[in-house]
Image (cartoon, rainbow over all chains, first blue to last red; front, top):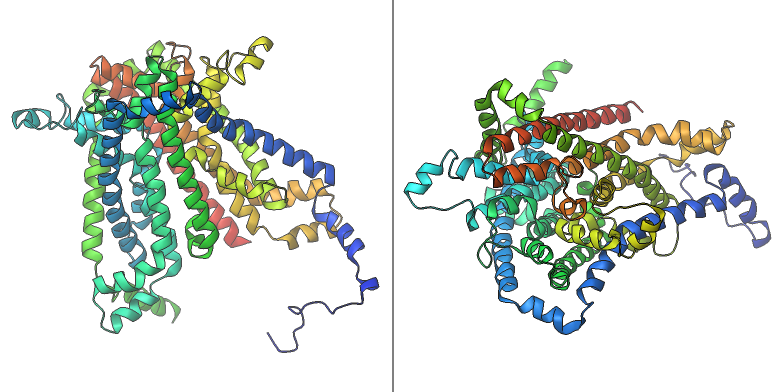
Length: 305
Length: 285
């Protein structure tokens, strides 16, 4: 690009009367639709989203408060609800950090090095997304259940995995498995290896390179992945339902507790617990939108899949 | 000269100065195998025990066939609805401005964040005969909750973000210059959309469609509340797996799971193929 290139300059400032604002708008009509077409399309899209997104969300809160605030609070303070909340928190507290470590390791190995079968490995990491949650629960029953591969051995040593807390944690890890790795891989791929090469050649250790060079570059993408992973860990239903055994106060997570209440026709209580999870979903969406708005450039590579 | 140079660079990348390959790769493979691959292989080993005849016998029972047909059929319809409205929503978001756009855009991901059980009971409350929406549909003779139509509604909700989020970035990247060129060469607006814009977006629509379809086939939480769960009519395949497990019929449950996995893996291959195809197309342009 030479200094004589004027193509990137602003157009010269014309005196007001000559500024061709009217005709310019009309010329643009060649690459956009008529006004009424635009508004019809916008209206259709908005009505569709109102019916399918907003209405269910509003319904959750409306049904939760239908019998007043006191019923709502009682439903949340019930011992079964509290133990379900505890179990959900414990499950997420184990599953999310494990998948975080995995996600960072997988992204490091995949993006900082060249090896054969890389795309196969990425596909395998994505695998849990295309497996039905029910099948995800089933596989652990087949491995750890009484009739399963390790069933007899576990029985002998009196270790319970299926129909107990470890099974719930395993099933949750399975369904939230790809979230963080999936967010980090495209991001770190776009960032390349130059920064790390430089750090290592200046004498930094591998750990120090990761901590001081890589992590600051990926922190928002990482947080983004953790948010999505956490939301799914709190809300997983199908996989957990298969391995939990539905023992009240023992192996019930919040979503399973909702199902029990609902099937007992305790609708207000079911929606009260549901509103708790819906609030978490709203917080997740808000945090996600904030990250996209504030650190959009740093996340951009990760969003393009 | 060129090939020599190429091997030279490749060797340099392979002998990367960055440490940690063995550790991270080792952990990745061990964790992946323990959590995903070995447990999933149990489905196929268990199915192999049945033999092909045994597998076929279970899969072709009327109730199982009906459940599989229902799951795939409703997922197909819901993914098609999402393909049409997803493109519309993405188009409106990228091309036009209107009040509340940013808020709506943020809400597109709600089905990813909202637990499926919550979505299930909320949709049931809306579409039941006495619900906010259901009370107006019932007099028209349209029963939604506790019928296969309800399943389609639930799967449409669950799959909504996929098409929007795959098409949106592609539309954002589409160059206005191409459209201007088409218009200046005499194409009318409809021709420009059909011949210039649409071909560029097709791979992303198909990818989003396939993702929504795969998700819909396996969906459980949001469906079981609204479906009514009548055998042969509104009983989805994942529910039948759960019922078989509760009857301790592990072989029956596993055979259905294997059938679903085979179809899901095929879908995964199709999605990967689509992505490779679209990458090649965009490189050609």
